[in-house]
Image (cartoon, rainbow, N blue to C red; front, side, top):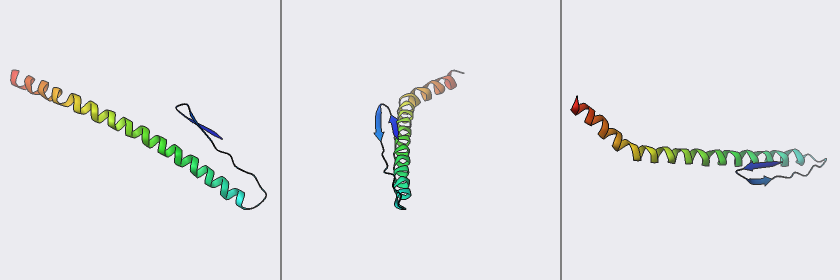
Length: 74
């Protein structure tokens, strides 16, 4: 099973056996893939949050000044 994150590939292989432990191994692999996906989504959300914070920090003072100048003018 391969998962592609921005051109990074993570290959996960499972061994199939007739013992009862194969299901547990498969579950661990699935949990690992899900954990990696959650980590990836968390990183992307962090980047979005940082971008929004930067945008707000850059634009808020200018916006405030414009609004206040409109109030003084009329």
